[in-house]
Image 1 (cartoon, rainbow, N blue to C red):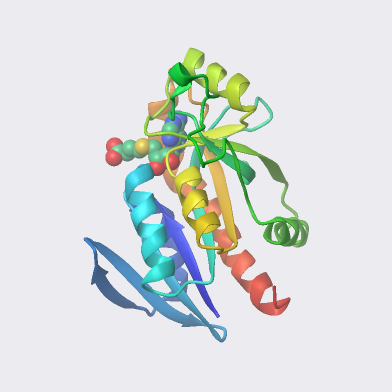
Image 2 (cartoon, helix red, strand yellow; image 1 turned 90 degrees about the horizontal axis):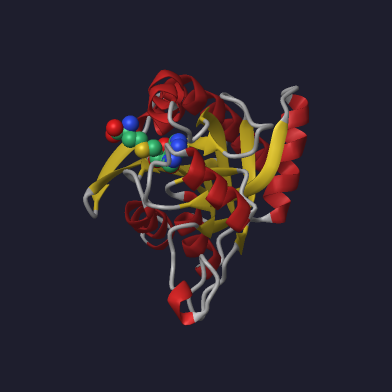
Length: 233
Ligand code: SAH
């Protein structure tokens, strides 16, 4: 089995590469892909660079070129739900693109013909993640993630995204990765640790908590890999 572990920024995959210690590096399509054997499975790891386009390229490459059969995303996000605080973990149940807008033609936000407003994440991996959370004595919230090519640092925009999509958190890569995995029939799991509240203090909070929140998320994703291997999911 080959599992992809993906982030958007170097900080999001650094803890994973550090834990693995040894890996090979392959350059492909303008990016580095790190490969390692781990407890009898193959891992391919990469950070895509920020945003929907780069994350689409990287996730598709991990599947089509490197042969990944499952994809786990680890990263940070801005909170919309007031129950999410910095450092808290959220797994996406479904994802939407908040900046996709052809509403002028009478379509809902996030929709284009032959697409869907939401892409559902893999239920089996979410169920497994709750077992992992229990074994780590951690709380893992489930919720909707909204994705767009914007760093949201604005209460009004954040609230609009929350209301329009019922979203609990927002970030810049999840929904595009979801579209790719869904189209290619690869089960996927999008995990985010909160780095900020997408409000006017967001960039300061992000800078202060990126590293610690990215580590929280990465540690959990590696426990997910262990659980996938142990429970043969
Ligand atoms: N500090 C970076 C830019 C970070 S962009 C630089 O200067 O280069 C924010 C990244 O974290 C994206 O990958 C996104 O997925 C996630 N993220 C965290 N908080 C966010 C927010 N409030 N709005 C949008 N994305 C957010």
